Image (tube, helix red, strand yellow):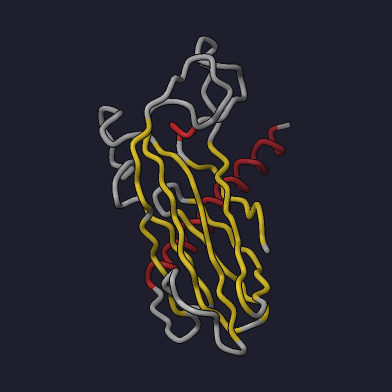
Amino acid sequence: MKKIYMLFATAALLSGCASTATINRLETQNGQGVFHVVEQRRSQSPAGFGDLQVTLNLKTRNPGSVLIDTTGYGTEKYQLLIGVNGQTQRVTGAMKQEVGEYRGSMDPEAGNGTRYRFATTLRLPIGPHQVTFALPVDGVVLEHEVIVGQGANAIELKPVYRAKGNHRLLGFHGDRTFYGGVKTLIAAKQC
């Protein structure tokens, strides 16, 4: 039994180190020429290129909601990194303060917090691309193969929040909440 626990602990440690290394690699890369950011009002992509629209909506706790807060939640420091073949784009989300009821809710985004809407459009050559999405503040990395076709393409990312603690009065055991941060990202929709 101890061997199984050690195996899980080692796997968790290594996956955390891998995420940190990937985020550091993304933050230090400055490759050029793979893609460029397209304004929303531009015309169609030229032959041989496709536009990939990336969107992510998530919620974090408000800044200063805990006694010692060094995370960057609720501030412009909370950003999305997108990396494609050595080129990285840092996306700052549109922020909006939300107020809502928390107690007894099964919604992981219930309660007071800051809503982020990340959206950007990248112009890429047609074909498969290994794209890396990262939230450095939460230490979350998603590597996903995207096949870009001619014209408009889209990928929608969804957050999976961390589980609540054993707060029996606030919710059911195993519930998830934005308050603890994002645990992982999933590519919910690609078209």
